[in-house]
Image 1 (cartoon, rainbow, N blue to C red):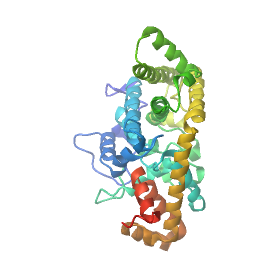
Image 2 (cartoon, rainbow, N blue to C red; image 1 turned 180 degrees about the vertical axis):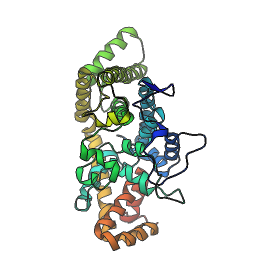
Image 3 (cartoon, helix red, strand yellow; image 1 turned 45 degrees about the vertical axis):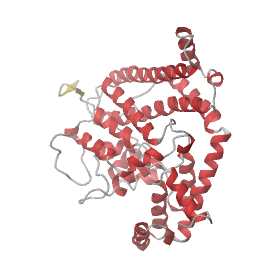
Image 4 (cartoon, rainbow, N blue to C red; image 1 turned 90 degrees about the vertical axis):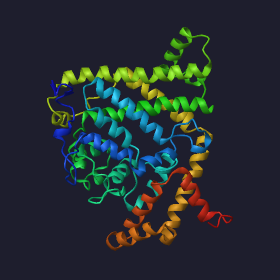
Length: 386
């Protein structure tokens, strides 16, 4: 079933969007989801992603992925899948670009230590922080806080959420309480994120020398692609061979996802986006075989790359850095920039130390890797008096 000659009737559509928290007139020459995408691209949080760690800290090399390049890659994969399934490309791209806006400096180590620091104050989770960024923290517009994105974009950004937090989020949190599904565009972007980081962490891991082709050949999915490339191009240089394998690694996952999802859509036969939301499980999915191969790849990367001693050393160092920053600011909030001191005074009247801690976590989560380094040096390095 099609609508306007392009989108399936169960796709998210700009003209039937559930709207924005603060009503606005429709844009003259853009759809609602295009407007969301453009607001994200022009946001401060999006620009900061250039200097936030994916796996390797920025100074370790110019060619390693950052949160920014990762987000662009997720958006590209999402658009491809959306077009093939006759879903909304603009919304899929928007979610892909925005999904990591709330990520801390220094990758998952930063998230873990902030969550630990915030344990008594509501915790910290980067998906929830991404929503907080677009709902409250960006300060661009005269008439409302945040970016005032559509419900559909906000729904897609919030991939995971505890029931406790969901109860505080109004309409966008209801699906977690009711065990409903998000739009197909949100579902596919979630898996596009996995495809991007698994495939490109393989590339960055090989480039860094922390994992080897010999090790990766123990992974079924990688080895089958390696053998195909090696047989067809026996004289190819190692670097080009790796690129060809990674390219195929992305492609085979995307093709499997599209073909499996097409079959599932045909089986479920949703008529509208509400049918999608009411379905008991995600419709966008891999085949059973690809899902198992994906899990094997994830296990390999966790054991051999993310737990590599060089990565662990950097993670441990950065976690200690952010933890000490948090504790210093909690002990004396006058160490913070003036605008954050003002926010804390306003929050403490109503929320006490919980409000203070949340403002401090906002400040730290918004830092780039190099800004966090600089702040740490200013506070703890006796030789730095700036």
